[in-house]
Image (cartoon, rainbow, N blue to C red; front, side, top):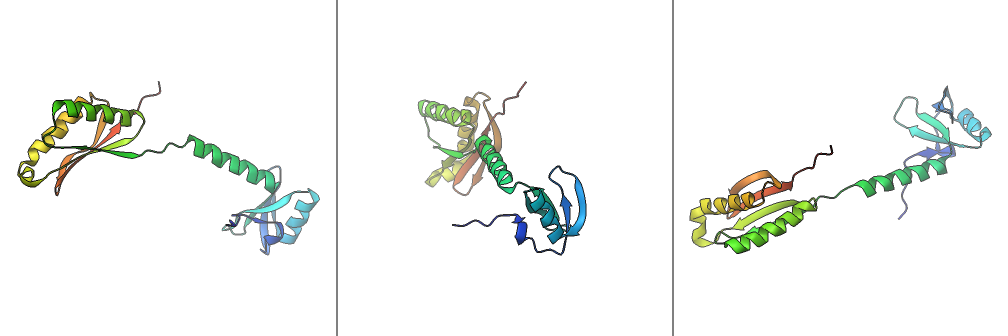
Length: 175
């Protein structure tokens, strides 16, 4: 797959007039693209159109391969520092026992410590639909069992046959 460059370089610049910035960052003024290309050739550098939508377009005299290398290096560094937040799900039931809720709480804390958001859900079956308030109480007990290590993004609410609650980790202050 060939990716087209974002910038027009050297002979690919076909504008009649361009605003030129020198290699040192000094404004050289508005001139024809042929004259600007001549200046870039004398400096043994490339003429790169950095702002094609401006009137007239802005071009800069620079070493294009070095510019592309530094740009790819910056993008790689940004990707490395980027954190991906996943949404994990924990399913409870309305008739869950204390021991089981402890296991689910431990699992939820593990998800939250790794920086993920957690969706806690209960699917009501049959006659449980008539007693949705019990499911909300189970959710509230589950949240209280986390010991304040989570933030409630979305309070427990009934959506059809599901009761859903969203949790996210508490952000640590960098003091």
